[in-house]
Length: 332
Image 1 (tube, helix red, strand yellow):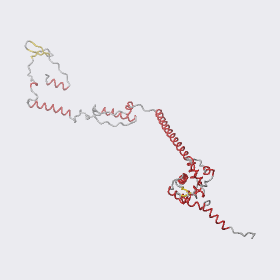
Image 2 (cartoon, rainbow, N blue to C red):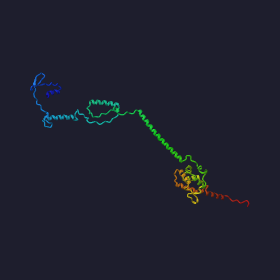
Image 3 (cartoon, rainbow, N blue to C red):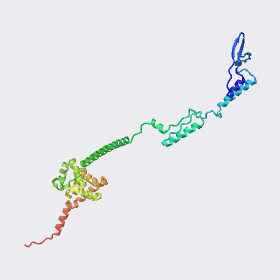
Image 4 (cartoon, helix red, strand yellow):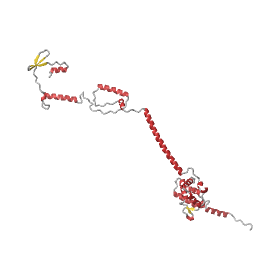
């Protein structure tokens, strides 16, 4: 145990004195100082501190000492202490922003100066990586040449897709044109070239023979030729133009709708179907079939009274006989 004077000199920063040398001489222990004088050592009563339990009652002085030590520890651990670091928890990660190199240099100089003079920071705080350092961790940026190559490749793909679509559209157009030309003749033949002997049908026998000679191709051509005639805007004009283009009034005078008055029926024959299709196509399908049927029957009913009809010839003959006067014979 050191004396109080030695402890005071130690606190003040002085030099500690050398301890005296001790040696045993018989049953006595003596100390020798620097001058060589020997003095007997006095026995000091040493109290054993460890003999008492921390929970055992102590005197008031020892209790005060324990409280002072506890208070010092609490002060050191309190946030108000100077040596206590304020940043004990990790700070939230700030967003990484792209900045220029000049701003990085200025921020670096400011951080070095602040760390040299400011308070201590916790080791758990997160430092922001500068963009220049982060750029080394990022993957390689594409060069302008690679970007141009990539753009040119995408443009080529788009052009290939467009060309393929154009080819498909062209094929569809060709198929539609072929279908139209197969169903409708572009160069419409005249009606006279499609009729036998190049003239209109004048008798019921000619009509019957012509119907039996019609096939699908000839029917289609005849319908197109009759529909191309400019007969008018209403159903009556169109029906008269179509029917008079293939038959004379003399031939139509021998037919009726269903065969009344001893005439031949026209409804249900092939020539009747051709007339309906031609009128329907000439009107661009705006006239219904019922209206066309009514107009066809009206043309058949008026055909005998028209030029070339049976009734028209008889009337003209009677008028001529009435107009010619009877002259007396010269012999009389």
